[in-house]
Image (cartoon, rainbow, N blue to C red; front, side, top):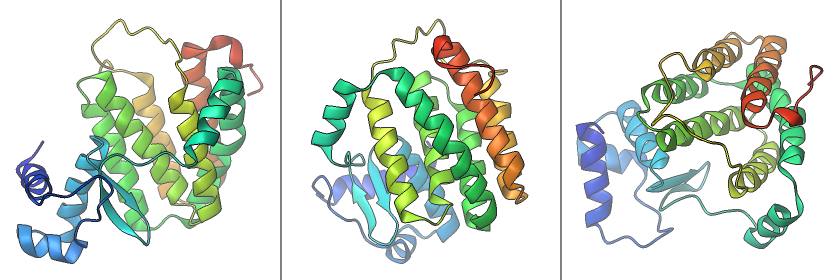
Amino acid sequence: MDDLSRRLRALIDNAGYRHNDRIPPERELCASLGTTRNQLRKALSELEAQGRIWRHVGRGTFVGARPVLNLQDVTYLRDQIKPEQVVAVRFNIEPELSRLAARRASKTDCERMKFCATRCRKAEDWRTYEAWDNNLHHAIARATKNQLFLYFFETLNSVRRSIVWGQPRDTRGPSADYSSFSQHDEIVAAISAGDDELAADAMRRHLHSVYARVLPDSVTETD
């Protein structure tokens, strides 16, 4: 964690906020910390990956981890749905989110995706990697500029994260040549270039690669 992230965390911790309290807007935080908005957003992303804050477009930044949408519904779905069904839905939704993101993503959206992909590479343990991987996929969904798509994604993601996959980890963290790193780069590059077909295909290949390792019976050559 860099110095700005530490100072931001201290500012939040020392302010006496309760869970889900809204913290000051970015312009006030920039003034308090003596930094630029771009640097502040990187620090906010760092704290968000740690589950210390969560952000909602149009509403602000809040203390604590992002609340699960419709907790009772998610719990019900978790108990009813098999992991293979989650995989099938991801294959149908996330390539299309990537396609739409390639058409609508702003420069800021693309910078956010690149930042998340870079932090995935720098992760020293699986928990940190998975947090930044989640942030990357969320950034892609947010770049669609479609609130309903974003809610669909967040609900799907909540169900996905509530399921125990049982994936064995034989290393402390991802290796330097972990295949998802280059796949993330391909997805982000395609979105940044505005190539919607390549973005959708790159996401599809990424999901196939991930689930071929984690849940091989859930994928086929045509997925």
